[in-house]
Image (tube, rainbow, N blue to C red; front, side):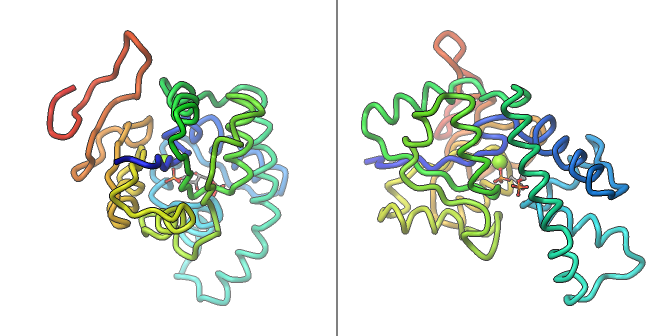
Length: 239
Ligand code: XBP
Ligand code: MG
């Protein structure tokens, strides 16, 4: 029987990337005196690198004439730490201002799962504070308390598509892979869930439309509300 749901955050709970993270990065670059700007097309490409710090480092490396040495990358990681902290503050401001809203069906699914005693966990690449902020400001002050296990960010050495963050959540829940369903929006997230041995429901999102979701237990455009149940396939059958 299904004992827990493990949710990805960015793209799955909400379309956080384009108007949330991306703009927060650009604002942080500007106030920190970096002449970097990520337009929509650039950002779509950069989403191939998961993790905000890793994404900034990959961008910086791409601007260098030669591939940077490990020591230079480590130094740059330190130099970019305040930029990422500024970005995290600005992301929270953007969520508070209403630029990021939950996807259809998410608030209802979380609320009902909590109500019937289904265990709920998060497996995300983003920093833990962003998850708390998103749930609190979109659903309400009670929502972060519904999350039994918040696995996120640097709690594991390797980010998605590595299985680490899902294995971290599973271990802390004390569950086996076959007792759990993962929910994701991207090919990289699906790969992480599958590599941890989990079944996965994919709801394709703004930046992940058209990606390869083979291996997903279900693939839908959204989780839907009553009267608008979403389209896709579930366990091999059209839905
Ligand atoms: C989300 C990410 C994150 C966010 C930025 O991927 O890749 O890096 O874009 O968040 P997923 P931080 O949905 O697969 O977890 O800046 O907090 O890292
Ligand atoms: Mg995602």
